[in-house]
Every structure is written in structure tokens, then in C-alpha cells.
Length: 317
Image 1 (spheres, rainbow, N blue to C red):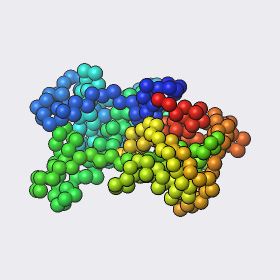
Image 2: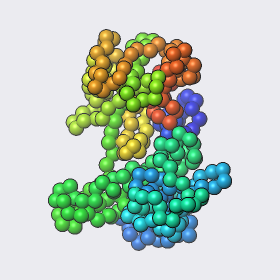
Image 3: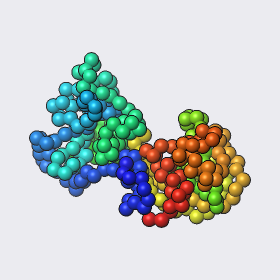
Image 4: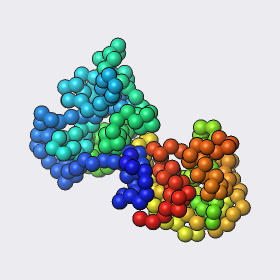
């Protein structure tokens, strides 16, 4: 993440996993000779995932996510390789190995398998690397779960440098999937609506959120989800920022919404609790100084950005 002050030239860059400076060269993915040339370049590197878990090199006081192809192949059986993009002049790929402890990593103190959320929350790699790790994880998650054609059931093959699968039997093409999710800060005057799920850390409240359904605008998804979970109507909805969220492959669409009613009817199948908070109370939560120990999500999450934007009255560009 970048400096968290407002305003930002691109507010989305203030969230985790959003900084990704690769030139994806999407127009060259179908050029197999070109991609093979990049793969053979001396400066080519690959991020490695063992199933859903990133593999890192462990140095004395730091971690490195970049492996040569020889190093990557030595860690386990390679299932997929995809071209992520150019990091300056250096080609960067993703390598998926079998979802098991890397064969040659056991007993080694220079290799670590760490889940992506922990890598992010502990700041183990730079923001630019974190964003690319998120890209790699989402893409490889799709490959792992789409090995067979959804049209006819036959095994599919990988094309377009890892960005398309094609069925040899029926010729259907399949592309990586991203699931859109709306996440919204709902406010009325000097109060905002926050909720918590049972699985949240004790005392943490966050924005309401939900998946966008077929045939639905983002604005309507906000209104539907807020009514379903909290029983209140919503009027105006404005987009604020977005965040790639690789758990497993979502795009969080952050919105600011104005409540059209105030009385809550909480759906306890969805939420453990939901309530209105004053602006001053939210500021205490952000500062981790609330007298009841209530908190907000960490800066990694777009929910924190939305809450801070409202608490500081920063809705502008």
C-alpha cells in the first residue's frame, strides 16, 4: 500500500493487493514463440504457489518471492505456468506446483510456505510484489478448478500464456473468472452503519458487503444487500474505489451509500450484529482507542479505506 493520506491520484492504490506495475502485454499472449523467448530470458523469474499457498525464499531478515525456473521446478511437480507481465525489462511468470509441501523444502531454512493473507498483514514483501502475488494466486486458483470443460466435460488445455483454456473436444474457450463484490459504507448524517459477522475478531465492525448478481448494477446490488442484511433502504450510491481480493478471486467495488431509512432489522443469519456509529466513535475505532475496545478492519482491506473516507469526510476525487 502507498501513503494513506488523502487525496490520492488513484484512491484504489491505498488498498492491499492493488499495487501492480506489471506491463501485462495481453496483446502478445497468443504469440507462443514470443512467450517462450521471454521464459528463456536470463532475467526471467517466476512466483511459485503450492496449491493456494505462496512459496518464498527466506533470507536472514527478509523474504523474496522470485525464483528462477530451475529453482521453481526443483520445489515440486509443476502443474501450470502462466505469464504475468513485464517487470520493467524482466519477464515475470507464475508457477503452480502440486498442493503439498515442496519436495525439497522439508528441513530447509531458506524456503517458507506462508498464506497470502499473512504475507500481507505482516508486510513480508513490498506492495508491488504483494499485488502480483495476488494476481498469481487468483489466476492459479482458476486453473486448479477449471481443468475440465464446463460445456462438455472433456479435459481442457492451456493457451494464451495461461490466460485461456480451450476444450479440444467441443472447441469452447474458457477465461479466468473474477467475482464482483460490492462493499459499502452506508451513512445518514453524522452516523454510519457497520456490522460484524460471527467469524470476525472480537470487537471488530466493518462495512456490509455482498456479491453482485446476474443482471444487476452495482448500485442495485448495494441497495439489495443492505436491505437484506440490515432492513434499511438506500438512496444515492457513489463509487469510491476498488480492490483486487484474491480470496479466492474477487474484485471489491467500494461504494458510499446514503441511507433512506434508519430503523434496523438485522438478518442474524448473515450478521451477528449491526448498528449505527457516530463519526467521533468511528474515529476512535480507527485509532484503536474506543473505550469498549471496538475496532475496524486493518488498512489492508478496502473496508478500512471506506470507513476512513467517511470519518474524515473525504468523498471527493
